[in-house]
Length: 102
Image 1 (spheres, rainbow, N blue to C red):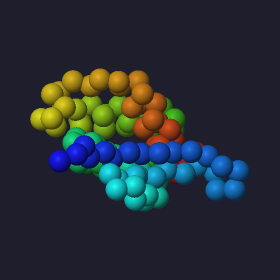
Image 2 (image 1 turned 90 degrees about the vertical axis):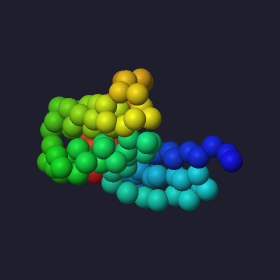
Image 3 (image 1 turned 30 degrees about the vertical axis):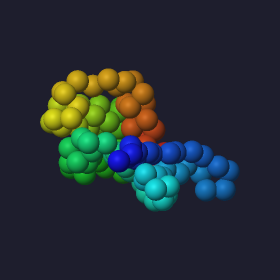
Image 4 (image 1 turned 180 degrees about the vertical axis):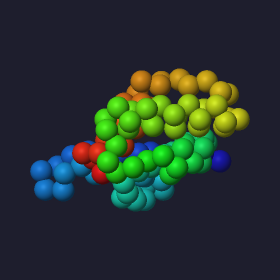
């Protein structure tokens, strides 16, 4: 059995503007407006689905990203309740949730 990998890729181009895709372990790409991947992603989605608003300020989006990552790590048994690489994840979630992106 190999390694399973779920990846989020985001970028920007002059024609479409910002885009985000989920890429599964088989290379299938799925466009969307918001993704969470990993063993704690269902917990993160619970926070994101409950509190996300289109008209969020940058600070609100950042705080929501922090909450989503915290709850994903805290509640998920595979994460061990510790957030590693928080700055990367928070920056990434902030980028995704920023009202200018969606």
